[in-house]
Amino acid sequence: MPSLEEEEIVDKLLDKGLNATSGAARSLANQEETKALITELSKRHGDIPVVTEEHVNKLIETKKPEKQAKEITQRGDAVAVEQRASDKSGTDQQSSTNKVVVSNDVTDHSTCTGEFNDFVALFRDRYEQLSGTLRDRISPRTIGSLTNASGGVTLVGAVNDVRPTSKGNRLLEIEDTTGRIRVVASGDLITEVEQVVTDEVLGVEGRLSDDGGVVFADQIHHPDVPPRREPRKSEGGGKAVLISDLHVGSKAFQEDRWEAFTGWLEGTDTDYLLVAGDLVEGVGVYPGQQKELTIVDVYEQYSACADHFRNLPTDLEVIVITGNHDSVRLAEPQPALPQEFREPFPDNVRFAGNPSLVDVEGVKILMYHGTSLNAFVEEVPNATVKDPVSGMRHMLRKRHLAPMYGKVRLAPEKKDYLVIDEIPDILHCGHLHTVGAERYNSVTMVNTGAWQSQTEYQKAVNIEPDVGFAAVLDLKTHNVTLKEF
Ligand code: D5M
Ligand code: FE
Ligand code: ZN
Picture 1 (tube, rainbow, N blue to C red):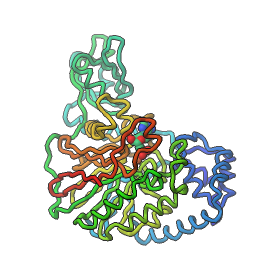
Picture 2 (picture 1 turned 180 degrees about the vertical axis):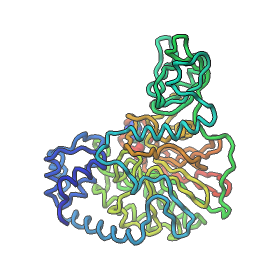
Picture 3 (picture 1 turned 90 degrees about the horizontal axis):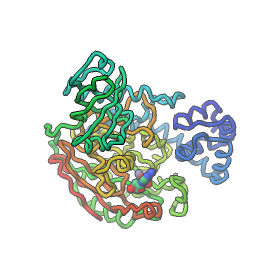
Picture 4 (picture 1 turned 120 degrees about the horizontal axis):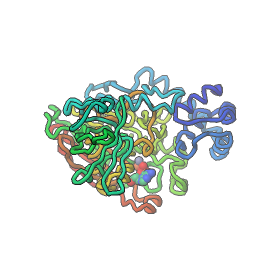
């Protein structure tokens, strides 16, 4: 393999949300295994604002990859050819049986280029999608037209800021395409506004102050999902099993429980297996992680994971999305697992991005790893780790999987893939490593826990994981049963 040119390297790093110095690019260009190194660097996105020559050299030292990296690039090439013949990933692609259709997947559609700090298009698209949902219900006026208004007003805006006032009320600042205005919430509305997060889109009904500088809110409207809706049910009545967070490669991966699960699966009539991210533990995800690994090479982690998937029934259709431990950019939406890691997996495994809307026999399952759930727990008083659907309920009310810019890593795509545009029948998340299943209005929420017991990191932050659970979804009735192994 010839080395990538320096410019190309800078572009590739930008694609993954990383700035690089020219020294770093030069150093990478001199390596045989440039692609693998770029992937490794992208996993450290959070820790490295600008990739320097020193970062690259350190990584090269720790990897000592000579022989192995060659194998990887060769593997990557071989698979890339295979993929062109029968691409298993991507948006709107149908499986061989036509029973699974994936949409709202950024894979192969990313528009992030050099202008990776330009979030204008992303937020405009978010506002357009979500304000449309509200506009149909509450007929707002524009904020810019408030100069000619008095008395009762109805507005729709994105939340710039929300905070308590000195008197214990809440102050919101909302913005639409024509202007911004402050909104004061008091009394019964305080609890409601405590659940508001920045960058969500909401509606406000209230009264304009005499000087026109502030709106006193009477009611807050969320885009929300309707309480009742004709459910999309599979006529075939197949069964899907939902899981997440295997963390293969971690000392804490519970192989015995996994084997009990796959043994059980063989004896059932399950048609689909959906995996909501964190297939492997990864490397360099948090400080000190090295000590907790049984497999220190990320390619070998995926290879071991693939071995586990080879033991699954071959007629099972498996759909896997990415999570924050997987080898792909951390900024959301995350593309599907890159081809170079897919090669050892059997043909019945299909890879999609995070999030993806997966239509299974006509039932729409929105799969999202759930990284934003930490931000919901931090920001919203009634969202907790113990009850993972508590944060998911807010996603549905706000019709957005991860609204708070700055609290979740977002990629500046031109379309906001994290908006819940089409109402799903099922919302499937993982990430918190705790289980829960509950209905909210017309949507069934499921969080599927983990196959990894408590790590040192989780012990330190007091997380008691629920380990070895699978959710069995009846596609005809939408009933969910949580099974422990
Ligand atoms: O997440 C495993 C567990 O660790 C899950 O309960 C979330 C928690 N976690 C992960 N990252 C964070 C941050 N940044 N803040 C708080 N809690 C966190 P996993 O993605 O498997 O590492
Ligand atoms: Fe996880
Ligand atoms: Zn996770």
